[in-house]
Image 1: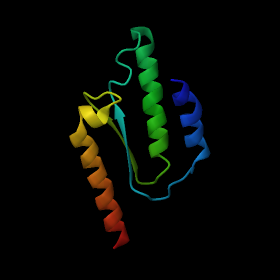
Image 2: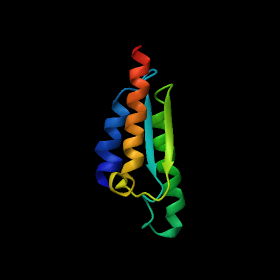
Image 3: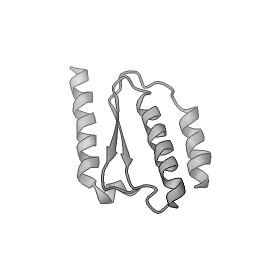
Image 4: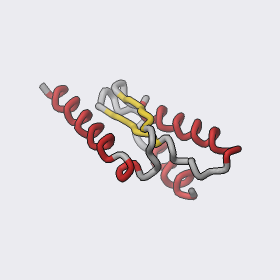
Length: 98
């Protein structure tokens, strides 16, 4: 948690504020905070979803998607969703170069 609210968040804040029209898909696990105390879970989920949507908005083509049935280890829980998003972004980038 220390790196989430410290170094990682600081790196994103210090990074590019705009990605122009770069294809971008931000995937958000719906179960990241499933183990958190119930009283805090909704607030944490709302905050996390909001941060991901904020990141997606840095591109005019940014998309933010919640992935049902996934945890923070989405690449293991839902590898097909991750690979589909990668292929979608690659196709958009390729089409843009034409």
